[in-house]
Length: 217
Image 1: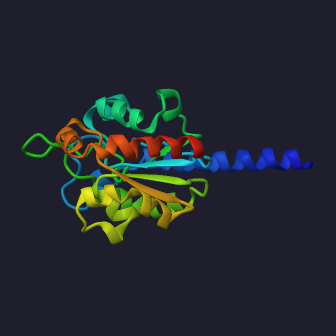
Image 2: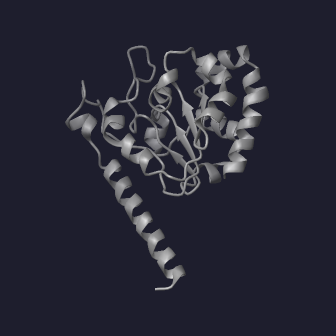
Image 3: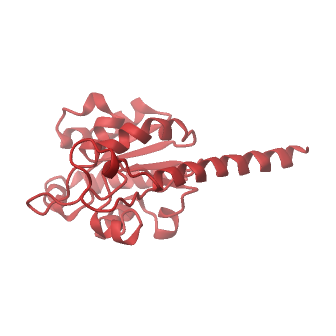
């Protein structure tokens, strides 16, 4: 077998392995059939984006109801804002070969009594995340969105105030290189007031984030 043929065969094997893993996640019903706590109140619909070649990983909380209905991660105004922060369009954002989207909970968790989204289901991280991230060797930039993502990807920082963690993005990225982590607030409208109180985020961090994404991709 020629070197090119071996490379093609190896790539096909990697692709097949990832497709099989994605199929297992999509078929997962642990939060309904063997839950940790109360079972998910609706039919599970795991939403994520994976490949063995992705260079950027968006490590978010859990899909919202709009994403649940559409079957696409960040298929809502939060996604519009997040893509603006990253400086990418939908074509790049939804290209699994470039960007992985691995929320802490793969399914929409439902609403709490006040109409807000419930926290990500615990079953997902316990079942899937360690092996998934171990099998993502090409990731160079992890974007950690929200408290649950911080607790998993940067556990030493989980008790610090969110603003303090985000403001320290340069030092955190340097300390965690070559697979750098950057913490972001959730791009939801609920954080509009935070963004107004912290103009440095869009004036300093966002341009640096766009530069890092361009370089990695």
